Length: 288
Length: 288
Image (tube, rainbow over all chains, first blue to last red; front, side):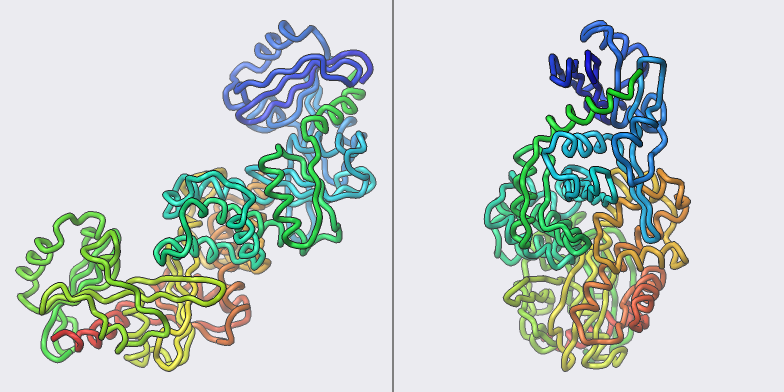
């Protein structure tokens, strides 16, 4: 968007505000005022405009969900910038929400909300080619096939959530406290995970402890490797792409690169923050 | 064992006491005084002898673990009645604990403690042939290949634990409250689970809700189907056995029979209670 506007990446537990001027971030701030911590959305937005400038506002993320300000209906894939820009949910004549994207085929269904901005931004800014596999690791990891610059099909795996459940509850919790690193134990887990026999591989962590076969300092890395390795194996089996572009912070992104390389494909990291700015700036052109 | 003795199936959270006379149960009682609820094992056992008779005692289960009375070292598979009987952990000259069984190959390791009595009992009582696949569903589901009447190799899948984690914590919890039945939603889950893409199939439950594709009344059955179907598919891929003997209560056992049949093999239910009595009676012969 030429000129200036405010962009909000308003997620479940966090929120990031940007003042973007001619496609460049002039100011940004992140806080914990996510959707679940917000009661009065109009009042919150008024405060943001007081602090960042009385400008047009474009929001993305869970703010457009049933637990957010107002529900923005999913746009079915394939979906590109134009499809999303045409379907902005307009709160008023200078305030709008980016819709999420849904996917269906005869076998399965999937949804995203918030990730679409990064994905389309990464292509628009030539951080990845128009036909590419993009990956957004996290609590719910998105694996997205982009075709002709559009979101063509995608699969969400609750890999990060399963790891969190195992780490905080259940029989393995006491073993999984250590930090995860992309070392030998992680790669051993990736190999094990490639068999896609998750429930058995995870019990193996317990058995290894009882038989004294693995130090608990390595158990968290092994478990993470099993989960990510299983996810990678399932996705590789379902795609023709040999290369993946990972939109993630370097710590988590490095684990995915290691797991993908261990299974014979290649991967590179993309700056997810810059991708968001590129995407929301293009979508800002659809504001009045 | 000819004559009379007391058998205890002493698990983590529950305990069952039997007075067995000439291989027949003369009295039995189940309570919640599992290993974790027990501080003074000798005093507990003295009370049991007061109530059930001052007889020799043979115990199995977590009572022989590091959180139990005393640790009975695992006997490596292959292991049959003689191997376990010869390695009873003797507390005194008329009190002993049955050891668990461990398994190792060049790829993985596994353990059981308590299940071995049912397994060997089922074969000894001719409830299953000496070469057979036996399955013990539950929190940690055991899949056991019996060869020549011995426990030859086995795999534990934490299928039941994963279901409990999803049901009580995390993003799917609110959807998974309903009872699980072996109906169409369960079988749909089994088909989905056969792809062994667990983390993605589970997120599909969330997506189906957001897109209005499945009633939450069916979500628990679908999720159970995905988990059990994934477990069955992994085990079928790793064994030559066409038939499985399921040692479980009828409710859970029926789910496993349905999932195994849906994936083109056959299965029948075996009375796990009778199998335990048969096994512990044979092992009772090794008491003095």
